[in-house]
Amino acid sequence: MLRIEKFDFLVSVYIFCICVSELMGAKTFPLVNLFGYQLNASVAIFVLPLIFTINDIITEVYGKERTRSVIRSGLIIIGFILIFSLFATSLPPSVRFENSESAYDIVFGLSARIAAASLTAFAIAEFLDVFIFVKIRQAFGKKALWLRNNASNFISQFVDTTIFMFLAFYAFDKPFDNNIIFLVSLILPYWLLKCFMSVIETPLVYVGVQWLKAKNTRVS
Image 1 (cartoon, rainbow, N blue to C red):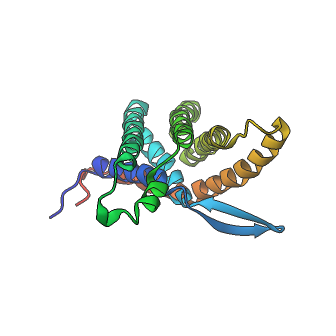
Image 2 (image 1 turned 60 degrees about the vertical axis):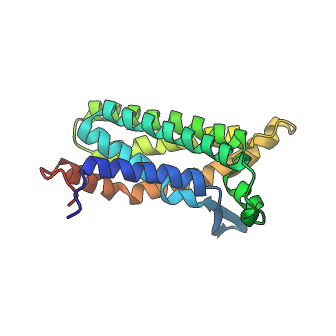
């Protein structure tokens, strides 16, 4: 029988979400056409809110220090992925893979600016999420888990989206007002979509907390 500790499984899902968002998040897909304006989203939208949900589950059961340790581990993993991506794309291909080298480099050869923007935004937002979650719990006690879950997610994901978009896409050769209009057009719909996903995943927080608190500490 497969025996896995619940906390280990939860952290594994957390790391999976991080890896997926970093390695596959560059792809966008058409979401909806709103008043003639096509809104697009990154495929990472399906896993990013789950990262913050897992944060809240761990914080609720084990406390903020345990969650911060998991976040630090996640940041190290992101750093490893970025460093190894640069190393792997710098190596010359073997003869058999020469034709696919350009595609490989496009997929895994992340620019330094995008990588730095992603890492910075993720780090700030993750720790902010835990901070807000804990403050709301101190103010309201153990009740209203839905409130601290969504409030912390809404604020931290707005910070995450805003910092990333500014660091990654601010054009220094264009006027400030031009940049603001463009960046707001990216930030607002993407943040609202993250908030929507957070609301949908609220039941997962309740289920996850009860599941993690259960006496049986193993998945199976």
